[in-house]
Length: 190
Image (cartoon, rainbow, N blue to C red; front, side, top):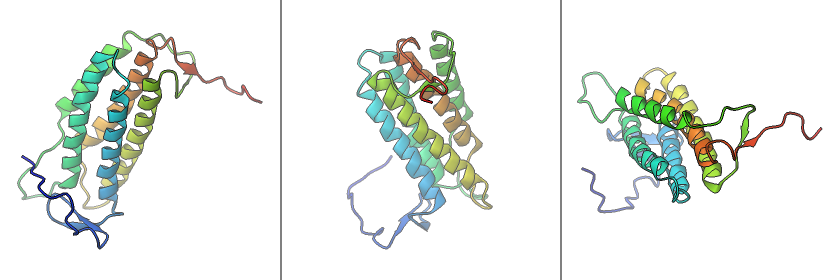
């Protein structure tokens, strides 16, 4: 259980922050950037949910995703080390649930004939923004995982990869199952 009695601690005034393990790192550290961008993804999804009064199924899916993103932040904040007690880790079952949700939404969509421009309904536009933030988080996590002694769970990276797919499919779903998508017209403005 998390207990937050004080919001400010002044311990970060020197430009460092603590990982869940207690280790202090500079605020520009790649691991901090990774879970900070996961948090940014979560905030963007919170904005999407303000526009989903008519899409209860997707809103419920996004509620689960927001909780998963906190799990991922916790996973990233306490790097796995040999000989240490295991902390909260992302699981393959979370990735599998996302895949099932993608398949459920995608089955109703009209086939694509072009790339989709971000837009359509407000919910779709916000979903596209969340998708691009998610992809940035994934890139940072992959870069972090490529560093020696900076473990990142495979399930965490897979989750963010599927989440960007989910957010794309969900954007099409809230755009009248793809009928309201704004399609790219190559070379239109030449």
